[in-house]
Image 1: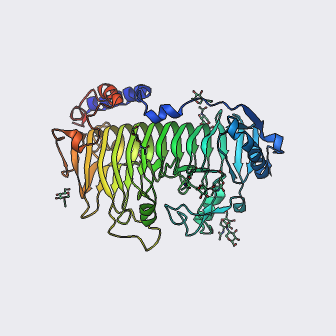
Image 2 (image 1 turned 60 degrees about the vertical axis):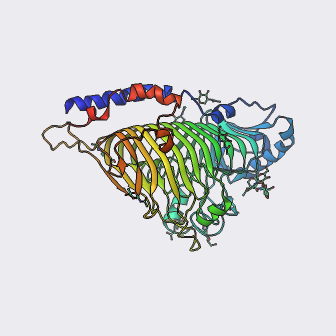
Image 3 (image 1 turned 120 degrees about the vertical axis):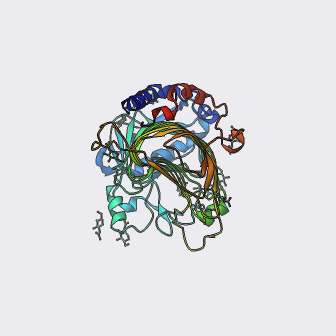
Length: 483
Ligand SMILES: *[C@@H]1O[C@H](CO)[C@@H](O)[C@H](O)[C@H]1NC(C)=O
Ligand SMILES: *[C@@H]1O[C@H](CO)[C@@H](O)[C@H](O)[C@H]1NC(C)=O
Ligand SMILES: *[C@@H]1O[C@H](CO)[C@@H](O)[C@H](O)[C@H]1NC(C)=O
Ligand SMILES: *[C@@H]1O[C@H](CO)[C@@H](O)[C@H](O)[C@H]1NC(C)=O
Ligand SMILES: *[C@@H]1O[C@H](CO)[C@@H](O)[C@H](O)[C@H]1NC(C)=O
Ligand SMILES: *[C@@H]1O[C@H](CO)[C@@H](O)[C@H](O)[C@H]1NC(C)=O
Ligand SMILES: *[C@@H]1O[C@H](CO)[C@@H](O)[C@H](O)[C@H]1NC(C)=O
Ligand SMILES: *[C@@H]1O[C@H](CO)[C@@H](O)[C@H](O)[C@H]1NC(C)=O
Ligand SMILES: *[C@@H]1O[C@H](CO)[C@@H](O)[C@H](O)[C@H]1NC(C)=O
Ligand SMILES: *[C@@H]1O[C@H](CO)[C@@H](O)[C@H](O)[C@H]1NC(C)=O
């Protein structure tokens, strides 16, 4: 027993140290978007009358500055600089070829008056606000139909002052769906980097109907008990790259979506080609990486590598329901370390939550080719809760090289013993190989001869996998399992 505990510790340390070398191959779209753009023209928000005292409302100054910068859009674009100070504002909108750049000590602060966040149309793929029927509050920083937008800074801060919105939510006095901190709609060539986002009223960063999006070196913080404060939500978006972020929030750390029931099915705009790497975080009610529950436009070709999750409700989670339609397929998640996580892997076919009564209960989602490999979890309560939909098996669910241990029980004779967390499965089909404790019988114990046909990318030549295979998984799980 002692030997196995030490093995596990060594394994964790090796995995942590080697973290940086894991993602040596970046997806093409990650590289392509990562180019330094310098703007030939720059203005400072104070030139437009803004006052950084934390009290003066600067919405007009932001709007006027950005309106003025319109004339530079066809001349290489322009930068709006926000210097040190506390800049209170309501919602404002960006333009194409703009860099919004914050000083390290700049804080953009969202107004606590709901009227400073105007009501806008619901998204066509949702048919209504996510929380309430009808419109929704516009995000603090909004952009629509844009190309080439950069939101960055030397780790400056965007503070949504979400506390008041959480109270309105909790005491049922909201009239419309809560706003995000940043929402970019139908935009291409977006970079969000080197910033800290705190206390979002709702989801923090929401790129929807976007492509070529790069989000890196971003910190997202909200209290662990704040309602629905997701970190980053790529939605009906393609060619998205999220790297090197620290996210500690009340709901999902990163969650990929693509529209809701009949509205999402009709709008038919998938999320695809998304690459996520080097993410650290925690969430008390959500998951480290989630897919859905809104997935009606389809979610495919997602790669997640090198995550470190701690103190969380779920590690990896797929959420869907009859009525959603759509699909979640070709998902590859690898190199995840989990510590103190309730349910390490959850696939849920009965999530519920419908926009209205017009959804088609026969619109069943297709969930297939989900590969989860090279995962180490300690103090896990439940290894896997994998539930498809009766009559709609979720298929090609493939697990490889996974080690979960339970809570150490100090009451037993040896202080190093730990319980084995269980797997519970229904209406799923797939394979598992080197999984400890052994997974459920629905996942056949041997990977098929030609895994590439059924298990997405399981033994394909994704370069970075080979790299950490040798280090992270030097020992087989059966050598590590409690004796
Ligand atoms: C968001 O910003 C754009 C400019 O980027 C503006 O035209 C639009 O009215 C704003 N609101 C919405 C809902 O897009
Ligand atoms: C997105 O923007 C492009 C132009 O930038 C426009 O042609 C297209 O209709 C827009 N789509 C939506 C859904 O607004
Ligand atoms: C975006 O482009 C579409 C199509 O041109 C247009 O219908 C829509 O009003 C535009 N949205 C905004 C906010 O300008
Ligand atoms: C963003 O942060 C990363 C990591 O701290 C750093 O390497 C990079 O230079 C920063 N970029 C800017 C533009 O501040
Ligand atoms: C950015 O600021 C946040 C919040 O203060 C801090 O936790 C984080 O370490 C900072 N990141 C960098 C790269 O300095
Ligand atoms: C709900 O919360 C808001 C914000 O704190 C507060 O102003 C309001 O009085 C509360 N309403 C009720 C009915 O509790
Ligand atoms: C909801 O509407 C009521 C009545 O117009 C208003 O008094 C209240 O402030 C609104 N609540 C929010 C959070 O905007
Ligand atoms: C996804 O990436 C592949 C390979 O880079 C590319 O061929 C395909 O066009 C991309 N899909 C979309 C929707 O951009
Ligand atoms: C195990 O994780 C839970 C959270 O899931 C935490 O409350 C508990 O303190 C952890 N136990 C140990 C022994 O670390
Ligand atoms: C669904 O999967 C189970 C194994 O979990 C299998 O026994 C059953 O035959 C499958 N049902 C269909 C309709 O394929």
